[in-house]
Image (cartoon, rainbow, N blue to C red; front, side):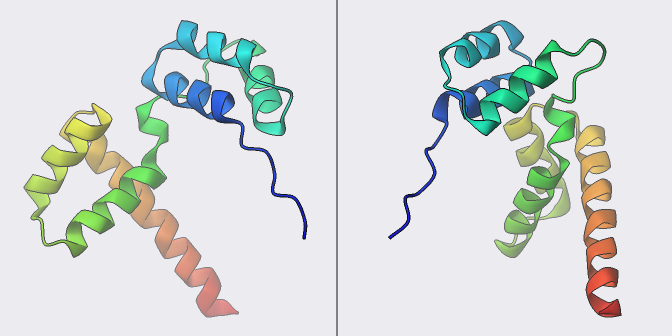
Amino acid sequence: MAKLPKIEIKALWALDELHKGNRRKALQFLAEAGDGPIAEELRATTKKRGRQPFGRSHLWWEIGIDNEDLTQRGFGYETRLEKLGAEYMLHPRQIEDALSKYERAVEELRAIEASR
C-alpha cells in the first residue's frame, strides 16, 4: 500500500494566517514548517515584492461553497450575507462580489462540461 503524503500542518496554518492578514505570525509558522511543496510555494510567494495574493477576498471559492451550504439548509439571502460576513470578516458588498465571482466560475465550468 502506498504511503500517504505528509500533512504540512504548519504551512497550512501559515496560509490561514496570511489570509487573515497576520503576516508576522504566518512567517513564524513558515519558519517552523518543513520543506514540503506547500511550504516552499508559500516561501517563494511571500518573498516576492508587491501585492500578495492573500486576504479574505481571495477566498471567493470557499465563500461560494459555504453560501451553497447555507442555501441548502434554508437560510435566506440577507441571513446568508450576515453569516458569511461574520465568518470571513468581510462587508456584505465584498461577500456579494465574491459570490458573483463564484457564480461566474461555476457557469464557466458547467459550459465546459456541457460542451464535452
